[in-house]
Length: 265
Length: 290
Image 1 (cartoon, rainbow over the protein chains, first blue to last red):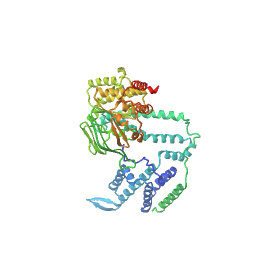
Image 2 (image 1 turned 90 degrees about the horizontal axis):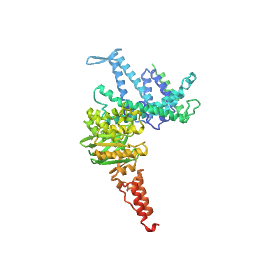
Image 3 (image 1 turned 135 degrees about the horizontal axis):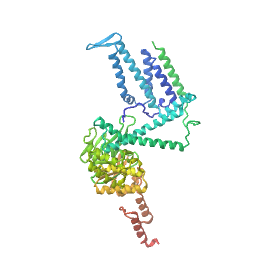
Image 4 (image 1 turned 30 degrees about the vertical axis):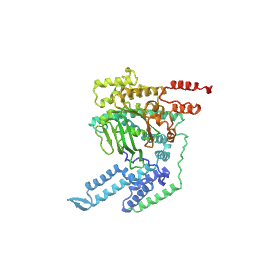
């Protein structure tokens, strides 16, 4: 398991961002993702970057943790930048190093594209960092509610999502446990030819599937035993509620959006 | 093979908000051929400790010595394979590790990985099946068609077939019926004797520790809390209470007897029937008690 990967990981906390209604967070992120593509000037980018970094700081998740967690994404960002720098040839030559010309336009394009990329990843990962999976699915169920009129199985979808999210850590643990047991019986997952390594996965996958199916069956049984019959008429133990802070955040975010669009060139 | 833990510290996910120190400066010596019980409350570091024995985990600082192998913080391990061949670990719910089509193949999986030749493997499978008291005609069955208790036995046979010198048992009887539990613990003890194994038992059962072990280690929050012969450790009732552990029922009972009737009986693993006889004869001889 890669411990430094934070995408999709929840860090419990009590910051303002943690306590916001999950619907607020999802809506803000939704519009943020759109608005990022509207930015096209130094000012609009600065506003959005400041907003994103400010929000990241407000979560009180250690910044070093976030930066380290985005490690796999850093590579993509840098790669995007370099690709633009070397492949596209637009605008004036700014300077050249060892006879290789650097173009103004491609530098700017590479820069803005990787900045966009960075902002998107940073901001969306803040959602999962500060919101428990259960809250996220509740919010999604609520936000997709209108689709119910079109006979779209919103509740079932949300249930499926929350069950799979709930069982990811369980399956990870199970996988780790089984791989340790098999390693103790002499399986080597790390070295050997490709064929050896593929066949080393079988003793891991089969027990994992067996236990996943068993778990699913037990879960279904337990749910039925407690009278689960689907979404019809089902109430929620944690009703979502917009509070004052949510309205304030919406208001602030509208200002940010207006400012971003206003500073477009 | 003897085991030595030298100031071992182990930290999970260091440098993240999830950082957790599971073992702290733990030093421990397990002599060759001994039967050591490791006891502790949930989360005291028992499972982390045993995973150091075959280098599934590497200490964050300190070192672990298993026979001639040294597992040290920050150094890459060589010869892992021969270390793992000599240390058999029976994990909690070992039946979850079964995967082969037949019982025979699953038991043979370990020895095969360690390059034992076919002939010898066949012999070892038979011996292992015999050790866990399963009939030989079970070899051709699928392990997934067996009952829970039988699956557990097959999984244990798979570890025994590696012919380990050190046998590590992590709550091997959890979830079995009382009779199955006793059979299994007796089986491990007779293997311990006949194969001259060094046995490390992780358990919640004070009774098992008292009955089988010749050394008890109590862990609390990643540190060694107590160590000694079972009867000595279980004398320190108050200290055990502090870490939410109780003393075995037999000892509790004898203590009550002493308090109520003033009769003190030395416990040296005598069976309950014998204890009862001793008790009645001691009580009966007292004239004032009629």
